[in-house]
Image (cartoon, rainbow, N blue to C red; front, side, top):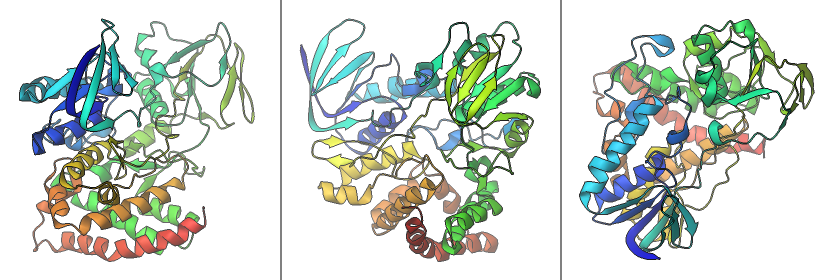
Length: 464
């Protein structure tokens, strides 16, 4: 048993663990020990499907101290004209570069890849079998709470008969002979990605059957851009969101307003969504997905045999010649929130919707800047992860409450405004008083946020 110690013991070198450690290293002289089950940093990116991309611009992803993208706009494809989306390979290479060329050269980082953390300060190498005991002099940082479930490691919760052609979407590029058709199982972002990949590779949309247990509200990627030319899209969308929240008379009215103002999108206008997982798409991607007409809405899959699929609400035919693609992994939807700062343990979670890496960096800054857990937790209420459509109200309410707390501290406002991972700050940083139309957007936000926060509490009474 090898005995080790460090100020912070970080379990998990995924995006969250790396973003947390980055702030500890750049804003303090503390030592960090990082242990991870994968051979390289990056967490689930190590086992992601080969055609995966970030859903939002790469410009505000990664760690605070190093840019991931060159700030370029896509020149073609379904994301044309928008900020580039890093591929999974680019993200993996980026985190490896951060570890090798930024973290380790400090002399303050010990990194133990390919190790299983066993709890109580013990971990074991999966390669050598060596066992280690580590003491966290300050905090244990558990970055496994937001452990993303990915298709390649997902075990379906339905039965699959012998002879059924079934695969995770990781294996789609390995197909060597065109099947009679494709059955995509799952309505989330992986299901969307599978459908778009098939269509992009020339598969006839009539050869695709899409099993959609629940339709989803989606976010418009154009409203997530942080280049100056997108100010009215990004900040205007936030103003629309806050005004919709402030003025809605009911939950249904809220979603109607959010769709009318362009904050929300849906693939099929004639079907009311009941799911929200915060997936981000472009409008051209929506149009491409609408080419698929064989959409089955009979609930979740219960079993697949050679000639039929049994679902909650009925049965549909299939064929042993069809390839069934598993996109049913639920990712983060079933994870419950925990207190972030508790004794000698930090459990990073999102403190702002859609932004896990900014949240991890912010939590690390709070850890360094404040002494007691009560104060730290006051600034870091965990944002509940969305599943149902009405969860949008819950996490927005927590987010606004957090933002209110941050605004009470000038130092925190300054830190957020200067942090690379905070996209909107970049747009506001370049704002000039003489830009009247942009200043009007800012005023709309300032006027509507207090009203939105108050009305949200009334709307939540309708869903609690």
